Image (cartoon, rainbow, N blue to C red):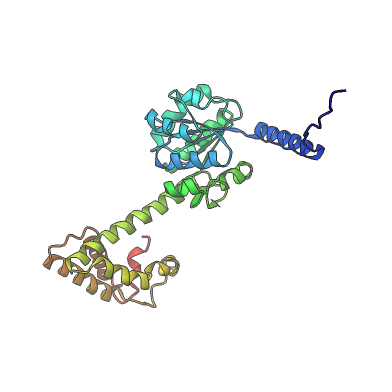
Length: 314
């Protein structure tokens, strides 16, 4: 009689667990919604990689096709035809240059956009453009949500930073969880369509003005032989940015009668900046205009009030 050999079968419990895991993975796969991303520059590149890392399937397009193609190494599906890139996508994200580029991209993509797809636009645009597109796409039966960001490429990759939304609150509620997963904080500015666009432009204006002022400061410091390490020593210890909330509160209160720094004294110091810069052949691009604005307010009789009156909205 032949010898019976014992077979090494896996335990019944292990088989059941494996089948359950396979079934769960199949269910999850079916639940994954296809996404499209139009505009894979620095910001879009980071967003797409972050989406893929979260298990999303992403179809991508960029005007320069090579930039979209680069994302295939991470699992994206690149298309040269924008209409094919949005085909079967449940959510279509955009991160483009301006209003015109968004309009052109959506017009070209429209034949491939399926019924019920949601359009999420992260582009910094005009307020009017955001309002117009919201209404236009609503008329076509689609949800268009403007969601501009204060995020750089690293933020997009790491899902940090800030994303702004406004408009129909029912729509925003539907999108809240997936938009929140792409950023550090989702800031909702209420029912007004276009408010997010306005807030984004306001924030960027501040950044531009702030950076231009820093440029004058760096030019001035260089002319006075102040080293980078000495500047770092000053600003690592003294953080003028911490005064921003209080400064904003004072400037919007309309009351400048109790000065912490009188306008005429601030103008005196501004004159010193300009004289030192001229003596050392340093170029100041912003400060001369600020000095002229100070002179206007002093002529109106506000020299003894707080210097922040120069920012009073007329």
